Image 1: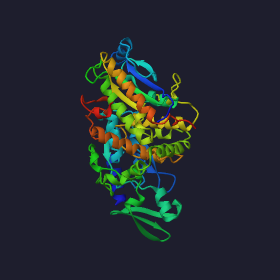
Image 2 (image 1 turned 120 degrees about the horizontal axis):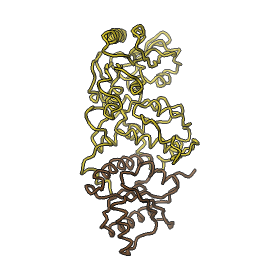
Image 3 (image 1 turned 120 degrees about the vertical axis):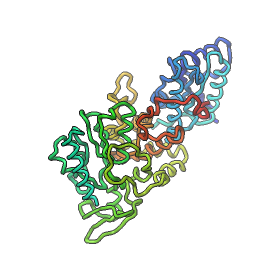
Image 4 (image 1 turned 30 degrees about the vertical axis):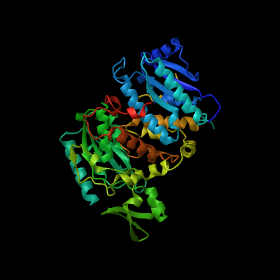
Length: 137
Length: 320
């Protein structure tokens, strides 16, 4: 447990998760303010290099949020995200990065409460591990 | 035995060129140093006699295929043939434009291992040949035999010959001496026994030696982007200075790009002037891909590329 507040970069897809975040906001649900949301048109836009770059410049964790499988606005975008980021997660674990730092989840536009829940959980995960010093010299 | 096969290869290639089945051939010729080979690309029948087959044919020749026009014959070991198939899957070359000549491969001998084993320089060694399951090394007037495990290149240790499925013609037999997946996995298991923080420290140390020569990228048949992300300037993903952080990101992202394409031919590791154990990364990526998707690169020319395909219900256990 550490007392510092983790910085989390969240990539949210325009059609589901970003709208989900919006709903969480307009419904006045409480969730930790550790999140920095970056809106992407589809979670399939998230290149593994985005994730690594975020960690490189000091984010403590990266959360990628997309539509539930089958619900992608572009039909198959999130299936590709799933493959790509599964490999990223597994491989980065081998390199020695804590698995908590890279997380992927699904959240639909009507799931404001789920959005708040996921964010709370991820923040708790990252508070459990030490701040990101991976790329410090 | 090697001589016979070499003769057979030369005759075959000459005939293929004469009949115009192929326009040019990509093969190996003797290199300038002892026990080395260098790629030979030619359309000239007179050059065919320079072709060789020996246990030092390390280069993955499929890297040239995208740049050659006409119908190209390629002298392919198992891993080269798989890389070729992988390029076909990615629509980088057409199946009809390549003629795969399957060459016998007992595994590539890592000369550095031999030198270390007997404590002599390559110029002091007279001969190295495969004799059954052993490598017979002649030096200082006597011959000593070593088990394949001691002298084979690391990438050959975990080779599974059954992955090699497609060729137009087979010269001799393709069967590596040391089979069995486990042998190649020793390095990964060693790494996994370390704590995550230790692993990160290990890679930090390794990548601080990287001079960003991009040899690993140039020599890799799976690395076929016309413009590499490291050379992008807007946005600039990684600093052009060879800092270890950026070296590491470069290599990690390269590994992601070749996931499902890499056949673990070991060229990136062999070429690395800083001796970074890249084979450990390619092997791990191969294992991840196999575990998650039961997919082996370059085994089926009609299969869609790994990252272009999906199953509706997979991997959900990895998602939050």
